[in-house]
Length: 103
Image 1 (cartoon, rainbow, N blue to C red):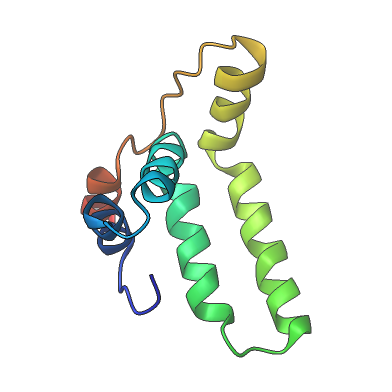
Image 2: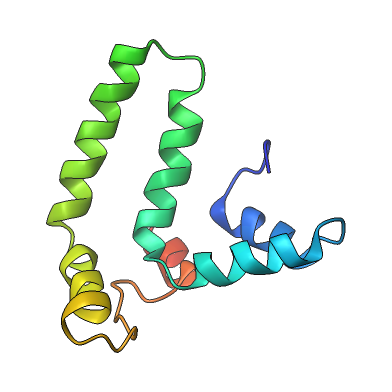
């Protein structure tokens, strides 16, 4: 999915994937269970870290990790997966579309 400008484009590409249908469906399902904020941060890091020196990559990763563990989705994910085991997280924002509206 190199060259995709946004997370929505990546997701759309997964929906249209035909070469490796089972692989794409599995990735799409797993992404659908993840925090939209964490997905956006991950894509942003992948794009920003391309071609950067390793020390700079590690620094950016540390900043992102700090942001993510202080974001409400971190504790919500722990609650949903480990504490209550209901696998029904209430992400903030709840969807990629809602995240795009905030950005």
